[in-house]
Length: 174
Image (tube, rainbow, N blue to C red; front, side, top):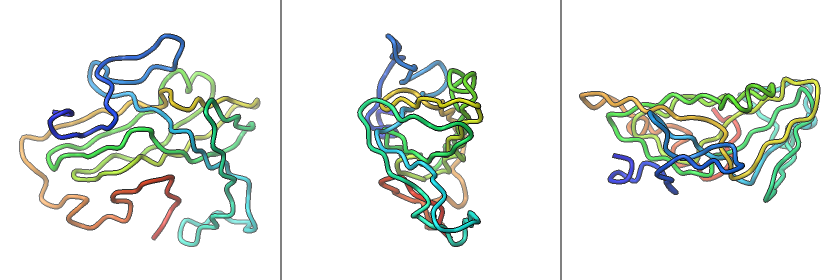
């Protein structure tokens, strides 16, 4: 289904490990990777983080080939290396990889709704009291796919979702 519908590009048809945080096709899902761009929360001018009036100057953009170092108790937004196209009869749930969770790094990603497509923007929090490394081009989260026996009544594309076809790291918008 993934290949015939071009659901994931680039698609890796098996688990890649070999010294990496694993990524690629797993038993019942797909382990997506981090791209090489990160937006590290620095605070900006505003004293309040407001999703209805977001200060994009609150982030410092970091592009790396290897890793980004997250300070203790910090927050970044990042995007997947893979571009996803979800069919009308599929929904996903995404969980952070246990390798990061065991280091105090928590990944938050909302479900990919039917007919949503784009690069996945995710929030990543370092809850640890020490700096943590996030590795570009390696696994960050596992996506689980749930196929329905019928298509949904109203898809993300039908309702013209605000995050449809996002190309880069996308901050909150109303």
